[in-house]
Length: 590
Ligand code: SF4
Image 1 (cartoon, rainbow, N blue to C red):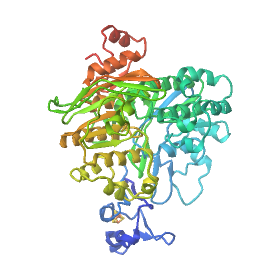
Image 2 (cartoon, protein in one colour; image 1 turned 180 degrees about the horizontal axis):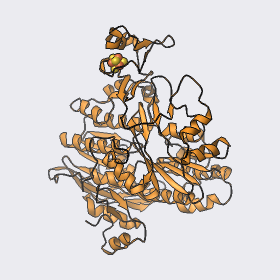
Image 3 (tube, rainbow, N blue to C red; image 1 turned 60 degrees about the horizontal axis):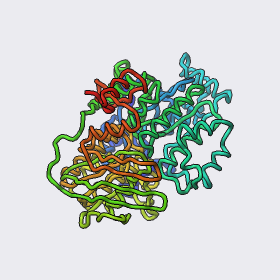
Image 4 (cartoon, rainbow, N blue to C red; image 1 turned 180 degrees about the vertical axis):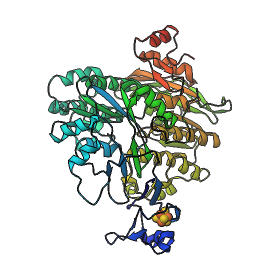
């Protein structure tokens, strides 16, 4: 029989608002059985999954969206690996760490990545979904008998596996660590490791800096390096590319691959081009966020990513998404021609950094992607346009309304305690597309949560919504895809284009996910220069030529996957790489 799951978010369940409406409307309760009962501990409902008929009435009537009732896919035959408690999240299957391999995890946020990491590092013991008794280890081992996980758990039990973990959120590092970066590394270093990493990751420019002054990208490099310097058997990197530019992403990928020559390495990565470049195998993560998660069996990296995009796992006959994701050559459907704004040549000199930007223009409804290395002035350019930074020469556009989402999101103290609903009603002053924005970013389920309880991806989605919901002529988004999963990135990109076209406004979007930039941009604006010393920005120009010029500078070629249209980095020196370089086509040969 197909298994039914009922999950209640006890943080957002508010019986004071509804007086246990779910219990009163449940048809099973109305017929005299106790499907929904009220807990004497917290005065909130419990749902008996064996009595629930899955009618969904409580789900639709709950005023705070606290209840989810779903039927698990019939194809899922096995028991869960872990359940947190009655009416709580459930995880099926685990990823398999492998010696001398990079095992990637791609897919949705909120479907069990953290639970899997906790189990593989012995912080959680699998309970096989059984909540009323302690499950002996022998039973857990029986579940994994004959698989590579059996060996792994045997080693884990013997205390034979040390795990090093790079967390997703690097913004919190300055709250935990202080002092000079080089001093921190010295304390962690076990020997020659640091010298090598200094070269591969080009850490020189940040070694003398104080942790408090580091940019998002530098914090990421600090976290990756610190993790690699640990003495461990399994290294786990949770989104190692957020805040890094394209070149840095590929350098980190190279360092991770190097680490895998002698260790087990697992990586969660939402930039598909990077995941493709660094992983040997991938597991797909799917399910329903905060309700249940399934981890697929491992696949080769190309097949695994393509299967994920297709949304259908043939071997398991499992469809987990109704439609396939196919990347078109560009989302820019119609050439924008209606003039909207000119901006002049800007210059700005700081004590240690100078920026020059060419004069340019932008059309109505146009999205201009901004591409280039970190610390070459992209955020400064945006800040000049917003009026937050005064240029030495050039007048920023005066009377245009701007909406701006910065790269690093720092919540105001007054906002931290607000629910998403209250925050968005305060920020989204333009109501015209409010419901569409909330729906596309899948924020309905977060409405009663407090802002400071959200994950990195959830905060990002809320901030995108808040920015898109302001009245604006010019939209400036700095790294909107950081911490979003693949599907969220695609939905957010589509939405940004839709809102900008609908409002007949214009947008500048800084991002380092090449696939997303390719999909979202009508034209691109290229930044060049020496990181932290000087930057130069060209006027917006044709996307393909700009991407080509950028990749030529860093010496990497990309081809298009014939099945899904996604960008795949060519291995340096491969036949494709040489062929494309010979034709001077660094971004796709059609
Ligand atoms: Fe009752 Fe289940 Fe229907 Fe909810 S979904 S009202 S718990 S039968």
